[in-house]
Image (cartoon, rainbow, N blue to C red; front, side):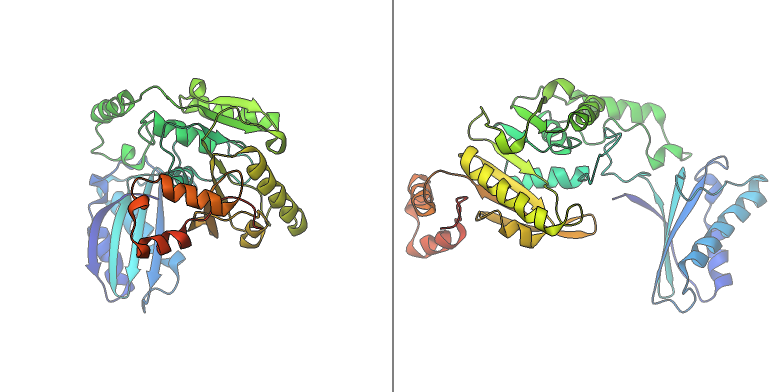
Length: 359
């Protein structure tokens, strides 16, 4: 995820034509020659470029040749971690050229030094918290916290922290027109919005080294005192807090064999039903078959992507007793649904799934 600054949009007929128009962009006026560059190139339906590596190379040649001509010096190439990232997109015989103002992807808030095993990215974690419907007031549990991303993102939301406020460097900070004083001023304004975290936010994990990692990440985010870290086994954990939210990103097939995954999901379902009554639980998984073994019916189901993996994010309302009694009570107590027409009642009957075990 990046924000691009458009630089040029031109049509071309040949490779030489393309090279010439890339040189027409005033590159030395955009950044100094002591910065490193990389070119990210894509091409679709082009009769001139059928190799994106050649497209990137020709673009780079045009840029550095212009620097050599104008300044006698040229930027070096760094494909792994460049100061300046140039995006070249060719569609048929048209080219759009942009500067990546973000640099490192924006989902990287800057607080996570290490993600542990199979971490969920920060933006996805924040989006799932939003989808869960958490009210920013009720207890929030991250009982298989790993590197602590769910709990840190929840604390950031409660504190009204600007995402990325802790990042020191963006792509635009290497440009000629970067105003360091203005950037520092705006960064301080963003940090000044931070408030004290009000709800109870608990990050738990069975592994002490994962808790240490989560604490370090919380410290880098400026939220160490806002999250309660505790060593616990989710399958024997009894929450003291009532009527809260919890989010889980349990292992699935790519991290465990299928038989173990199914057994794990059965145990997760049992734990949620028996010890988290009154909670809403959000679970993300790319293993749709194993999700069925939770034995729970979701109130809401969303299709999402965890990186390249298509996944589902299900939200379960957990309660004691039978589902039918829970649904009836829920409709009776709801200030609007209690006045529904018959048509609305039929709709709610289909959509209101409880979190109890089937049968």
